[in-house]
Image (cartoon, rainbow, N blue to C red; front, top):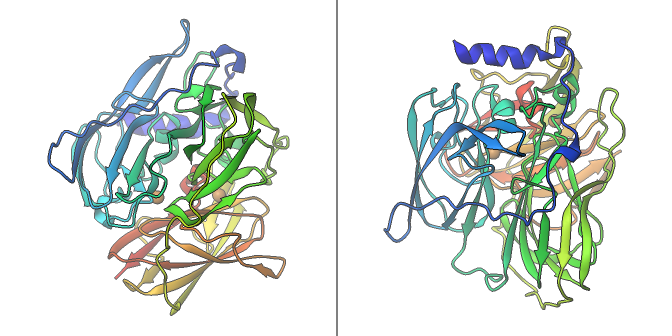
Length: 469
Ligand code: C2O
Ligand code: CU
Ligand code: CU
């Protein structure tokens, strides 16, 4: 039971002296933003995407002195980029060559529950399985894939298992724009270059590494030559990104579930909680080099943690000023009818001295995630409103599998507000004591997870199970 011991070590590490972390000056910075390696389609049939993924340990030399052992898909950090079209038949065989069970979850895609990498469907170490699904029409958007095993997601993502999944539409109103992908992840390394264990503070607030990477590179140099469509993923376990893109006009054109009805010009930083995605069109207003930053955002962290600081994520090289006339409408969102069912969720945090990791549990409706328990049931195709109440003093987010939802209202201190814009989301942030009501419809039967996507909170209980019948 090798992998059991490994888990125990990770869990119990808090009783040891804290690990020394690598100085941020130790990793090189300023390389050109790497392009993500593409996952090769092995099928030459029209409308079919077939490929192989292997989750395996890989040693990567980050500096001449430091070699880090990651767990990676096909040896790539981040995993290879998957690109497919609406309507495509996808068949991906995953070989599990890491020393513990895993699954692959296709975050945000509208696919059958038995192909969605639920923790109940683990691929044991040393085995393979094939995931097969058809991407429905209307599902074009910016997704990602990552493990979703039982209690192992935090470790497997921290070790490097995650990649992007873009679904394209054949009629895309922004197809003529140049595109970039910015996949944010963070890396926490010991002074020996090993992936660091989670500290108690990581278990409370969500893990944050000292290195924020974009496409696997530390503080890269990103060149923008003209109006560019940028897809952004926050694939960090616990880090919130509050992106500031200076000297550019920034338009929000898409969210988790694809394009929005119309572009929205942003006048403040773009907040992305863990697992959220956005599509922007950025238009340089003048030439020059500026910092891409995450602006300090107070999310009410626990423990002795200093307030969030602004951090530099990379350098943005704007080669010349540019302009663009964006289409005034991008897409019509599917209209859901009147909701005929209502569900309420309440997030709470409790201390638990028997919990060795951070001494805390994170609960939904007073309960800790249990793989054997169905928490909620929905009727297939029924339109529902869910109200999620964050009854705690820190930000959490809400993610659900199997559907994209729209937001009905935000409520803080009894004041209800409509959402700032219409959009399809699968992950949404909740401020402390905020109540959000969403409208959602599940269109396939089976078991679906919903949870906070601060992965440590999900591991420590903040996850529930929905049965769609
Ligand atoms: Cu990104 Cu339940 O997952
Ligand atoms: Cu998901
Ligand atoms: Cu949380």
